[in-house]
Image (cartoon, rainbow, N blue to C red; front, side):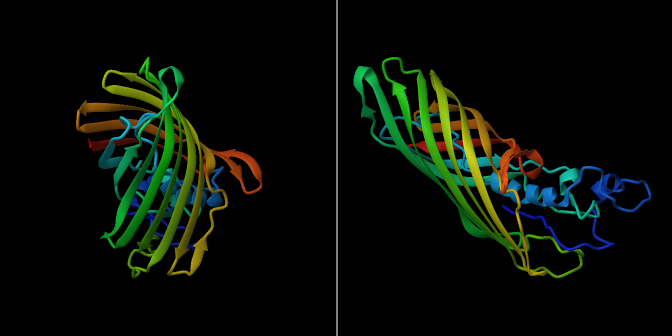
Length: 300
């Protein structure tokens, strides 16, 4: 995966992607800028910093009970990285574009294990489980990225009915990217080694319905994001003044296609942060994402 954007110093002759030149030329004089009414440099910076952490959250991609008690799954997750429009790529009062749309998909190996059930009265049970995800630090396109994710949760089911499930789940992801993350202000400038750190921590509540080999589920959660971005060529730390703290929503289906095959797909959204550093403040312009994710795993 490659994460590429920048929030740098101003200049009268910054690079603008030709695909965005018409949008950047807001007054029709053939020169990029000025920014349209309502534009905020701080919000644009916050959005980009939050976006890549939101794109790498460790969503469930399974029902409240991931699979049968005493079994596990190893597989590959494929998360869609939404291509940002020019309006989100233009910074510095619409005089520079950020090269954000480098990869459409984030692959992440992941696994989980459902522990033996804790049987309750009247045929009901609780199934605890744990899972992990890991992206190794393989150099890609001049950057080196590493990502570690984990989850722990428990699902509740009525074994007599065998259809309705409910669950609680905690998840966390730590990521690091080293390399030329911020594009040079002048595309002819040499590359510098930047550092981006992101972390996400969240709690989800979910409800699922099992029908044959399918488990349809929905979840509502709360997510907290933290970021750190050091730009080496300017020795600048880009500050995220509104790290995402808000809801997440997932709607998906899990399919046991074969005795050994675990397939899932979901729609995932983090629509808006609810807080800034001063208190309650609903602000989707400081961070949001809408995406889809898929998983194929081997059951054992």
